[in-house]
Length: 200
Image (tube, rainbow, N blue to C red):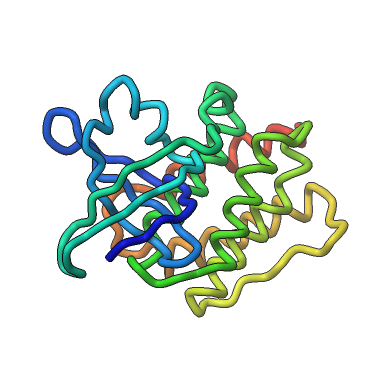
């Protein structure tokens, strides 16, 4: 395996003293896990953050071997992790994707949609401008996994979007995240609670 491609960091788990194992979404190869030497070091720690867009050089001697990767930062989403609502949205979208997708199956539409969602979260004036993209991303992921999912109307008001978001929750929990380790839905519950405060 040898892949040079843009990748979205979905998760990073410490490995040994200084390395991490990162799960990344690429357009061409889908979800790829790779060993990042020095990933916890001063230079790479700001790079290996969920939500960041990187240029990845991923190599493995065989399909059964965990690949090694070198990363260069393209777009940092780290500044928005200090803001409660964007941080919750980035955390949920990346955790859902990392948990739901099988490795090395391309999902070009999900790659594009996730990149667009993260860009909207980071650059919109308020969450009202990206909630529709979030609902659409969840619906698209459900569709790609074969479980339906209702796309929101083009000009849906916030209350309708939050209602659709609530309807997606049991589908995600029952079909996409059933049997997964860790409580990924806790990240979604946090996001939903913060979004609902906008209606207060």
